[in-house]
Image (cartoon, rainbow, N blue to C red; front, top):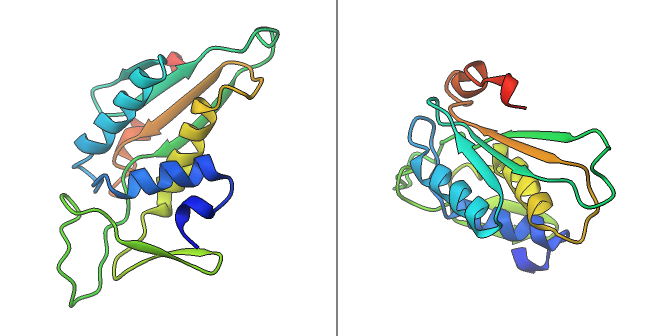
Length: 159
């Protein structure tokens, strides 16, 4: 079984992509660029702030404009740990993983599911045009693993 066989497929597809994007704390430029490209590809409003947080907004589908909006939050960086005998540069190298039974596991490093899976859920929801929904605001904060800097400096008045 491969990652493309897991359900919901769209979430795991984004997780697969995210594992290929290096994203250690304080070196989040590549994942930030990935999120900005995602927003552009899906014609969604996006903005970043001085701390490196990304806010992507999707308007409500017709008929849901008067419903309360939904705010989703994740963080874009990951825990970067590896086995002592492994050569891996988290600033450059993708995560190597495999699907074992019903589990996704990394090979000799951390997987990055904290919080790559949160980012994947947010992107899948934003990308799926078949879901009727109120306005969605997806915030992906920076530098969570090394001090919560992104969320501490986020301007909540944007929401």
